[in-house]
Length: 152
Image (cartoon, rainbow, N blue to C red; front, top):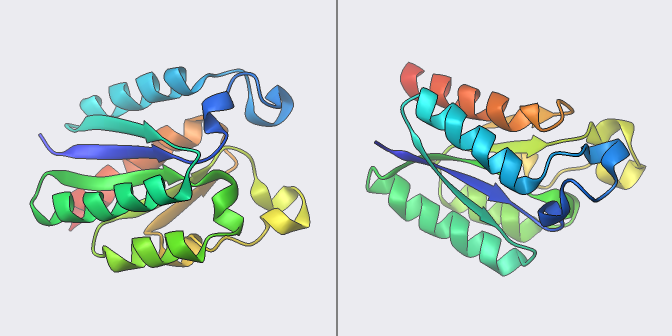
């Protein structure tokens, strides 16, 4: 059974306590459990990693590219957090591991928030983007990834 990597960036370890009016009360552990169930329902296993360090996220993407080429990994669902708006390095990492499908996810509607959140360096490299559906967006991205794989 190929895996899906659920990758979460900075501050997402604070889900459930950080700005619940924006991000809700669901914890990262809850998100991971929901995503694991969704992935298994669709015939995939799920691996999860959260890091507050850009280099660790880049390393995970590079490794995901190798695993995808080896047939071990179907794709990545990635919430880059604040690095979305600052990291050319994440764009380069995702671009460098194509054709690995990476789906970008944001819990809030970043386009309805502060203007600095309106630009994503990750989006141009992403295979798909899910924005503003709360934590349900993670499951939507998993379903989208599964559909994309089955259609290919």
